[in-house]
Image (tube, rainbow, N blue to C red; front, side, top):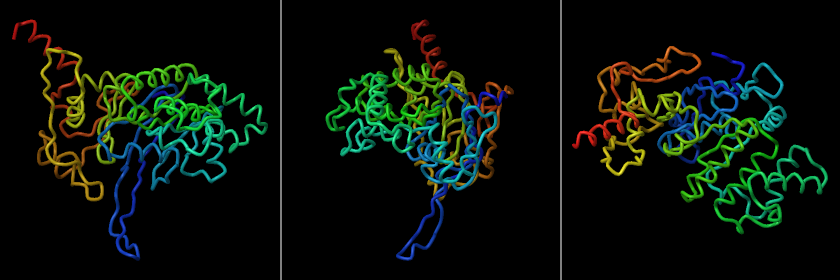
Amino acid sequence: MNNENILLKVKDLQKYFLRTKGFMKKVIGTVKAVDKVNFFIREGETLALVGESGCGKTTTGRCILRAIEPTSGKILFKMNGENKSINMIDLNKEELKETRMNMAMIFQDPYSSLNPRMTILEIVGEPFIIHRVVTKRKELEEKVAGLLRMVRLDPGYMRRYPHAFSGGQRQRIAIARALSLRPKFIVADEPVSALDVSVQAQILNLLGELQEKLNLTYLFVAHNLAVVEYVSNRVAVMYVGKIVELANTEELFTNPKHPYTEALLSAVPKPDPHYKKKRIILKGDIADPANPPSGCYFHPRCRYAKEICRDKEPPFINIAGDEEHPHYVACHFKDKLKLMGIERKLKLINKKIGQGK
């Protein structure tokens, strides 16, 4: 693997939350929100992190930025002009502040992520003031105006408050704020899930154009696989704090190797009027991260589970034999199962239609 173009590498990342009880807050257990997560992101690419609600996607993104403190692991980030990476977990307060100029976050809800008491000038210009990049009012206004133009908003709006804007416009403001210090890396936490479908396409196109123009690197957190297929280079599938499969987007969609990935793909809408939906309905509830099952966390819901799945946790290994285009999966039967991807389903449907069935 060529390590020179890797911007971020996450190794054995863990985030455990303590469970307490009573007035004295006695510790009675832990919630394994993120449990030994490993992945890397190359410069200029988009890695999508997908899974059901509560699986640990957002927590992973916030741990990387140290918006919340990780329990253990390594978060290796390559700074501008440096060949070696720094471990984000080892940084003190001042070092972290400097490093954060190279990374930013776009939050899910454009209504709650913008302070209603601040004008757009104050919201977008705040990073410049915090990091002392700008000291003069006129210069601040010029920089904010440039950012608003970049996200296709009228700079004349900068003295208005967030309540004067629609959801799509607010998310553009949030994107402008994230871009203010020209970061290399952005965590986009479900940036379009709270928006109308027509507006989602506009925001996704904007993010793509900005990535190409500014050479941005995205960790794109999402649960909508149709969106993920459109924006990502690679996809990591997460289940109860663990990544169970990671591969190039096309490879993962057409040739999934984990039963959970197959179930997620079965829920993606198909643009074919002849297609009769055959969604895989998972039995039971998602595992409790405070009391996860033994062995493979997915085995209570898996229709392919055997005794070994209940007793032994599967290793997360690369089955592609290619370090440049790896396909990681954690499943005991990864080589034996023939799982259905999206393209395979459409080929089957077209074959039946051609035969008049």
